[in-house]
Image (cartoon, rainbow, N blue to C red; front, side):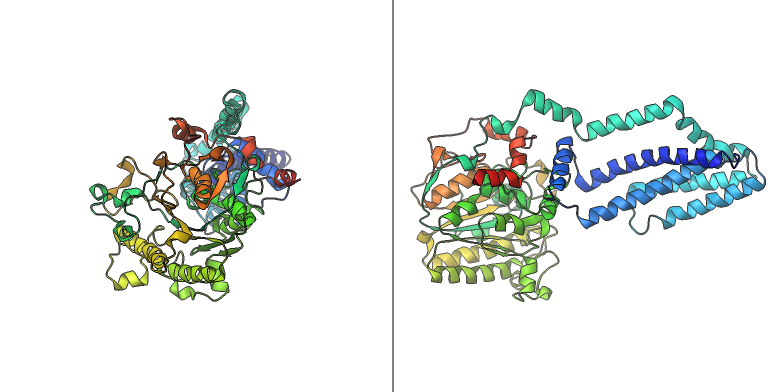
Length: 547
């Protein structure tokens, strides 16, 4: 072993180098797993949000972060020990070296704890094998086996090789956070939001008043494809046909509207929901104190016009910040899974593992709509179905009626419950008093539905049925989630200056229509980095606009 005088200095130096290397690689792996794709503008904006105390890191992330820190410490200590402490020949020093190697091998099973990812398991197997080989060599086995790991570590972590290793990690990290794409967008492509595609609702005059009540039913993962017998083998939307025969609108899904809260925000605010911080779209809403405070959305307009706005959700209202979004944008009532349980409106034992069953949700929605109609004030009522969320659930009444325990059964059962609500409106004779939107929140996310591979189905559109005054004729049938924002206001009786809000066009107006390639352009660039989009999340922007 090296002399007692030089060993501590050499060990500490090697430990620092290996820790920086191990932690850098671990952090890149962790961020990819936790946050999916991370971009440099997300990192920079997230730092600004944290500086202003707008976003906090979820506790789970903190635990995972420290898990990687302690494993990087273990990794660095192991490599530094193997590099610097290996004796030149077996003997007393070799025996001590072997004991420490075996101790380190044991620590590789103790330090990580119970949370283990697949990659770490592979690394652990390799490192423990090296430690056992080194210990065996120090104890008297062939010298070449014993010295292989120390010689390899010295070769890799010295001189120009170490510089090349750091450079490789640096270049990979720059590509990983889209460093070059970020500057290309800023210097060459520009900000898509400032090129005429986006219309700031704060700068648009919305006049008139709503003359009807509004019902929005967000159907989890329901797309028009499910009604195609040539694809699904039968019409899974058949239970809806008494109310919805063939909708004259269909939604082409856009980026940022391909998950539940993304589809809701897109339809109510005319913008996508993208990761403005290093957190994913769902985690962003969870960690933020305020949800899109600089945006003006459907609920904001309706509240200003005297509407009482209600949203009912069967799953967690905390997940993805759903409650923060609705309560920040004009909704006076919000009910999520936690609220149903806390107020003892629902027994948790009657829920499935994900949410309240759709049959129970429709029962409570019908009861609340009846109350609101009896009060005689204008209102909007939105709800989300949940039985068709993965892995799929079957409401108890559907079990009694013999619906199958597969995806076709889940879809038909959920649609039968939606139809029950629509039939209630008809039976009450209230059709003329409502604008009713029945839509999928996004396309189905599961790769297969029973025996149907959805990935290979062409022309998949999200379900969209908008029941409104018969005089309102759409000028095009294929729309985006964004178009629903101005179109719903128009259907309710409002007048939107310029017929545009956010990225949406009023589908009932021929005065302003999008270019033929508009949807293709949106798909390509709507999630590009934008200072305008970031400003919608900053409270100072909202405060400045209110002055």
